[in-house]
Length: 285
Image: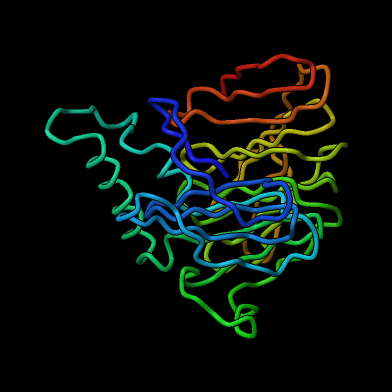
């Protein structure tokens, strides 16, 4: 791993430890860094303020094949930082202070740090691991297995995982052409969203956590209503106990080849998708 100064463009540090290619990274709001690799492990790096560098804290094991994806419940909050389309920026506080205030509010809303930074990993073994507790605490190999819950249901490798901005749910996408919804605090299965006819590659949530968009090998994107409190009129509904999730409410055609990536603007104005057809398309939800 290499850390760079985004403004100056200079190399800050190189982190070694993985024995194969690194597939995914996730940075927490309190300066912890997770890396996932083809070597089947996840490494947790802790920032050392004195050295101004990251040091290896712990290696998380549990997957039997390469780890493809990582997701943190705080991802949306750390991504947006100080910028909020609902709030006008002022000079009363620095950007760093505003970002810290937003992160602190998210932690409080989640019930504390132990609930705010939840990690989920997905791998070629077709499973997800829902990691629990403070993973920065050093544990013996015998007790490390108690740090996660294995989530099963996908029939092929898991390509992508994404937490909803409010942290209450997360979604997973797989080569099995399915998108699955899971409870954000317990990892309990909620629903399977089926509709793609090719592998699902990427996911993105709307800022209000009610809509989910998926990108697929079938050259389309699908828009899903993922809120469990109500469903649009005439929408086909996927039920799981008392919870109801609408199936795909819209298919977005237009690409001529596989769609590899998708993202939703934090102000919810647009969705962008990138495809093997060498184009990027911008959509108005």
